[in-house]
Image (cartoon, rainbow over all chains, first blue to last red):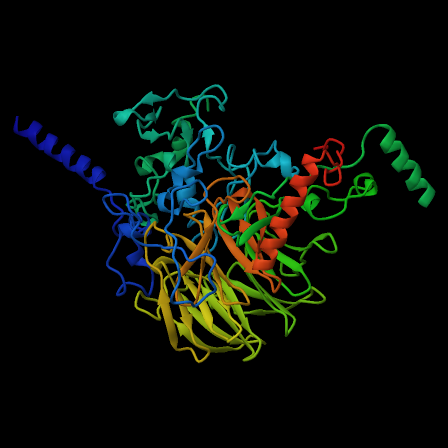
Length: 247
Length: 365
């Protein structure tokens, strides 16, 4: 009995360790940026922006626009903002980027910083079958399809794994079927490691394989930062085979 | 040879291959603010590929010219006073030079190769172009488009992400986003001083991105992870800080680049808002243009912004793989636009075909 208890205790400790994998101390903890340590104490604020400017009654309390004025005026007749499709900054959120197919391009949240300037370069571009078309033709292609990734040093990694495709309808045979996870979102439970890979509106996004809050599996831990599951998923391309069951 | 081409062109016409043509979209309704307010900005042109810029001849198709060459992820943008538009593409890993007047669309050749192009800056007076190339800064001759020299050795920069030339003081300001600083260099690439170092206090920067200079020589810095714009005097002292973190108009979430027009308006792109906001030097917000999306006048992660002396605004709409060109409107522009609209309506009412566009052959993809 005692032995069993110890075992349970040990197991739960392992579980706790996994649950509390955290952004603090990871590369997404901006306090880690060289030269900035003394300057900032905050962690969450670099991704989660505060919803400001609207009070409890919905009145916009800030951000008054001064259009039709010349710069530098101190007296003006002001216009309050209004909620219309063209004046939408008050409701800015990345889910506004809904594509024609209804996909929510959550990956844009990552790509807003991983743009080659703030951080390493990553790329969503037109699909392979969408040759660079004319103005009228290409507008509907972007964002609905697949991504190629180019790394920060510019080495061409085209044919790298795409994002923002529909997991079920855009895929070939031999993939693990998704299930409905807690909270009602679709998830794929890994075929080998039983890792939970979330889908977003039925689509695969960066966050399907990367957990941005989980920075514990750094290189020194013999793993890759921000990957879902344990370091074991890197070995033998397990992370690929977790979904591609025919490989 | 001429006859030969003529024959080929005739042949092409016969088999219905009339070259890639399409009707440009009607952008007339894309104005900000929305009616009935007086329009201050209008969308003028959207560029996805060379087809939107240059004249394509049948011979180009026959002789294997690269036709239909488009942007993947345009990031940096700059414009010179000859109307040349410089665009870096971090997807294509190329820098393009476009000219709408000459209808040209060319690549900027770099003998070092482009490992990761990014920010661009133009100095019309000293005829220089600065281009970020991974962690170095390559300088080109604005007239010959030839590479001149490189600023920095390995380790001097982590990622140059913004340039502003000061032709009067013969300086080039460089924002190093991952290096967390803004530095001043001479025009031949010698380090002068550091304008701002890492931190969150006023005068310090955290992931500085776009830079711009006004005609008084004041330096504007997009201090992206401090969610603000900082303005420095030519002597390097801090003049003004404005902006805060939040999703209301006039605030910032992912500010990327800044351009200052000749009247002192500041145009700041924000990738999270999918727009660019218009401020004055005091930080008063005048207007914002765009929403997230891929329609005309919308943006998906806008990055670089530039403005010409003619008040044309160029925005690298990175994830929509296109450049959008806006025109800032004066009162007389607005009146002329309204008058033209009235004339069109009158014509249409009278059944006149004077303003109707000729139908064009269906585009060939």
